[in-house]
Image (tube, rainbow, N blue to C red; front, side, top):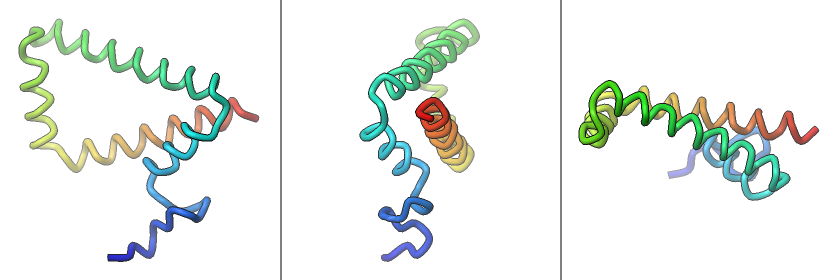
Length: 94
């Protein structure tokens, strides 16, 4: 079905994920690399926090439970993170 509100070819339309991928594939490589490193560092810190709080073996179980029980919230957070990352790369590109 056609989505009238997410035209992938329109610079002002499209999903946050599609815009993030456009930026990753087309922006300055060093800026994108810096942003991806920032994201990985944050993810590593969050994983360490989960390990410390719940033990290493529990991480996958907790993530699966969260993805099942709070899918809408996770989807919204992912969209926000895509937007933040796009903004980070674009503001450094100026």
